[in-house]
Amino acid sequence: MTKQQTIDNALSFFNEGYACSQAVLLAFSNRYGVDERVAKLISSTFGGGMGRLRQKCGAVTGGFMVLGLQFGNDNPKDMDTKVHSYKKVRELNMQVENIYGTSNCVELLQKYANEDQVSERQHHKIICSRVVSEVTGLVWEMIENENNRL
Figure 1 (spheres, rainbow, N blue to C red):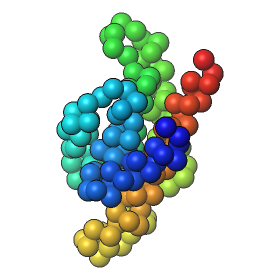
Figure 2 (cartoon, rainbow, N blue to C red; figure 1 turned 90 degrees about the horizontal axis):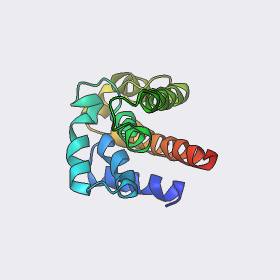
Figure 3 (cartoon, helix red, strand yellow; figure 1 turned 90 degrees about the vertical axis):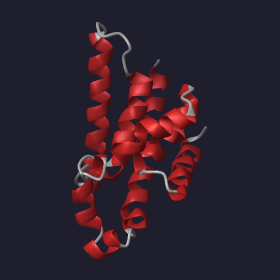
C-alpha cells in the first residue's frame, strides 16, 4: 500500500467515527496480520489523549503502537531491539512536536480550536484529522526508510 493509500485508509476509519488512535493503528493492521477487531479493541481507549484525559495525542499513541509492531521486541532479554524501538517512538514524538509545537492532546486543541468548536466536536475536522493524516504519513515513512536501509 502506498503512503497516500495508507493515509486515506486512516482518514476513512477516523471519519467513520473510530478514535484517532484506532484510525492510525487500523491503517497498518493488515500489514502486520493483526486482526482488525483486536486492533480496534486494543487502541480504543487511547483516543481523546488517552481515555479523554487529553494527555498524549491518540494519533501519536496509535503511531507508537504501529512502531511497536514494526520495531518492537518480543524477547525481554533483547535490549538492542527494545532500545531501538524506544528511539523510534521518541523520533515520531519529536517530529510531531516540530510540526505542531506539541504532541499533547489538550495543547493541540487549545492551539488549533476554541472551546465552542471542541464542545461541538468540530475539532475533529479542524485539527484531529490533520494529525491523524500527518502521523500516519510519518510512521509510513519511518517504516519505509528503515526497510530501504536493510
